[in-house]
Length: 145
Image (cartoon, rainbow, N blue to C red):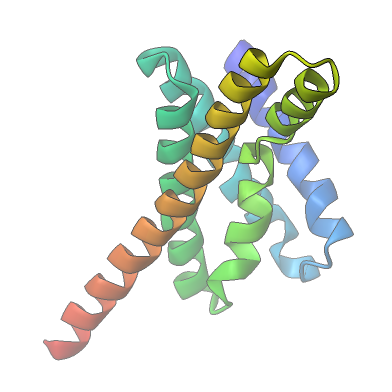
């Protein structure tokens, strides 16, 4: 039941982000599906591997691959699907807690939380880059044949 709630709330939140950032109307539900699949991937892999960083990486790869597939199928730029899809993965709370620890002069906690937040952000970018590169490589191989 928890997974269903996570799926529903992530889907609804990405609808809000998609509307806020001007996603084309006919793509709002598709971008929400990409983001919800990314969030569920993060949720399940974080439980399975017990690592937020690895879970975020796998979720970013999921969002990237689905974004590239949807872009090719619906003939839209991949960024239409990828940008709203990564919003739930962005470590905003980690940045908040890092800054809070700095303000409270708890430098060890700030360093720990800041490092984790930085690694999560890097995992998102590496996951998107990896999936985009993989998609372009497959496209290049198919075009040669």
